[in-house]
Image (cartoon, rainbow, N blue to C red; front, side, top):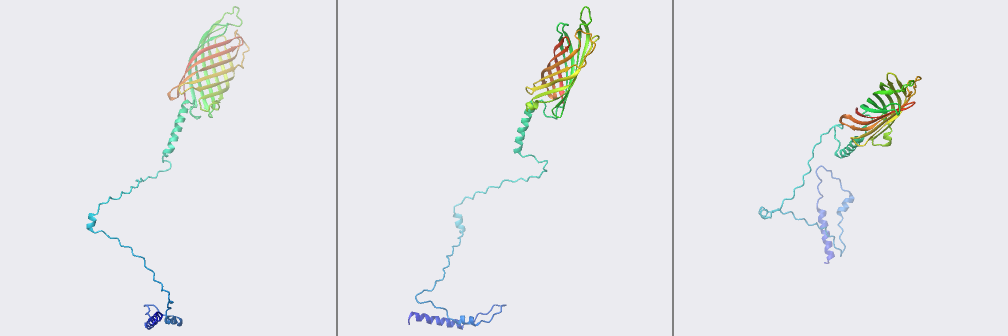
Length: 343
């Protein structure tokens, strides 16, 4: 018998045995359907035999199984060398619970505090040099003066000494507008030459002189120097000079032109000067002195101001005055000590 005939006989016998086996029973709860004619023919049909010379496909080989991990025996675990424990994992940083605070009470971060501290230090340093820390501070200024002067009248009379007391009040408005009021009193024994005297002998009389001044000005200092160390205030107002004695009284009243300048050399020394000129518009019609009527008056005060703690200041000043008569000039030079405060 050949090999092919043997294989055919084996296939036919296997098919006959399969045909004699009964069909599988249906599962419980399932309804079996009757087989159709085509399905019966497929069951009865013999399986296809491979062609001669062609090997049948080999079944797929299963992948090799991995060996199971072998647990060491207790005796082996004792004899095994001790291994170092793995390094402990770093602990996470401790977190602190921050209590929520209202926005008003919450402190500013440190990064913002440093520039603010520098800015405050700069402002404080500049403020020490400023004449006024801010436009709305030191609005009022009050000064009192005491001093003396020595006056001459060219060839008319001898030199005369004067004692002087004065006071000054200033008030700032709108940051740069300044109102200034001043009052001075001078006392002396003054010599006059009568106008209708036959011998032209001088006559000495006790004399009191009163100076009243009210002016308004605008400070141009911040426009010249922005650091606040300069005050330059041109002023315009009204001035009055009253001379009272037993025989030769005189009055002078009219517009006043002047100004005030202050400059801070340092936080401890301030230079200042005040100038004023009053032109007389009230000339007396009757003259009884050889000096005749007064035409105008120029006065100045300049010196050093030494600021003290508490807003006070001590001033050491030169004082000068030139009273112009129709026939001569009464020129006076002196010194004054001032003390005042700003608030």
